[in-house]
Amino acid sequence: MTAALVQARVLVLNKSYMPIQVTSLKRAFCMIYAGIARVVDKEYQTFDFHSWSELALAVGEPGIGIVGKVIRVPRVVLLQVYDRLPKKQVRFSRYNIFARDRGICQYCSRRFRKSELNLDHVVPRSRGGQTTWENVVCSCVACNRRKGGSTPDEAGMHLVRRPAKPHWTECLNISLKDGHYLEWVPFLNIVDFSYWNVELER
Image 1: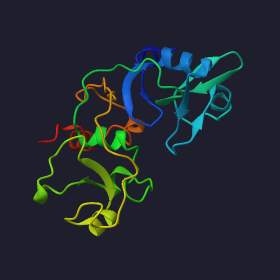
Image 2: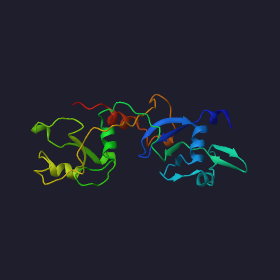
Image 3: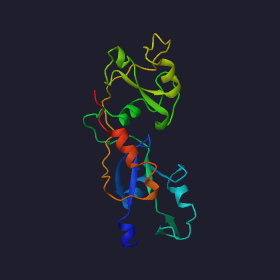
Image 4: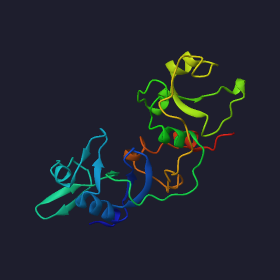
């Protein structure tokens, strides 16, 4: 293994594809081999150790030599369980509201990408509603327009579940000042990170 590969780092995602830490290449291979994590490629496909080791190595692509073959170097891995995630005070942010609601519009029950969701005040601010865990939910554009400045009851809409403060936080232990690989970009966009993680004004 070359010095460059010894220094290589791998982005670790939880089961919701949220980045939680950066680990060493050696540790990443151990997790993949043990079935704790799967490799994620640029097409968002996932691979276990066997299927990843069977992939052909492209010209100029870094690889790790093992008995009888060379395996591609993974850049992103996806945890198969939530075990051992650090916990601390939950930040009231877009990112964590999105995580709490699992990307699901709390009115129509459909799943959307973050870019297709709004934050909706269940009781509108114009009606005295506050910006709190208990009054803010993810809403798709169509449901947000339909509800407008009304309460769900007035608009004939029903919440998937009553919003509440979660008892966890997806703790991102990654310094944005550190360099990262091209393969990390879809999961670690600095502008997107700042928007979704800033503490919301109550």
